[in-house]
Length: 116
Length: 110
Image 1 (cartoon, one colour):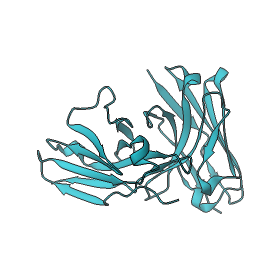
Image 2 (cartoon, chains in turn brown, blue):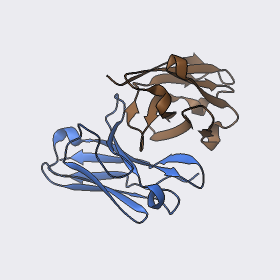
Image 3 (cartoon, helix red, strand yellow):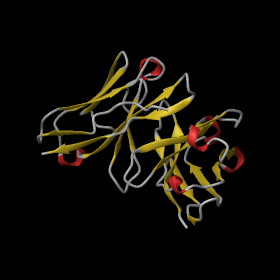
Image 4 (cartoon, chains in turn cyan, orange):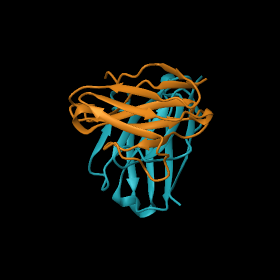
């Protein structure tokens, strides 16, 4: 079964850091672009970042550039998001996704809350 | 970064047909097309159509996507109560090198 399981979400103070992880199974992880999408409370979906199969290309939405870093470990079938200088507006459910002609596989989401 | 444009809400009757639209520009929808997702709150979104308008396996034939220029459309026939959800379109923007989402359309089945 193709599956993505995200973890690492937590309550953190503004200016703090978190590292999200996503464990992939049921498919050849190293063959796909992977990414993160988030949904703030009461808002729509927002794409955050993605990373190429070999990690050699990364793209970010403007609002997280310089603060978030996406990475992957193909040997461990895992995707990561290092989130630094967190802001209240980063509060959201973060979904790990697989990119195949769109976003064809979604994890269950992990909740990040940035609040003092 | 302006997103894709979707109507905020659409209401249709049971067993009727709903057509949802998504408008972009020459760098996103017109370039590589758009994909469509269904989102029931509390659950992860589900892909209904790929960028090339084809359906993933397991998706009902009642859902079909098409594209004309800068507009992508999702047509849902024979509306059922379980079709009531938020629907999002998404496209890769080749000029900005980002994926974009529409604001979402809340579909109500009366």
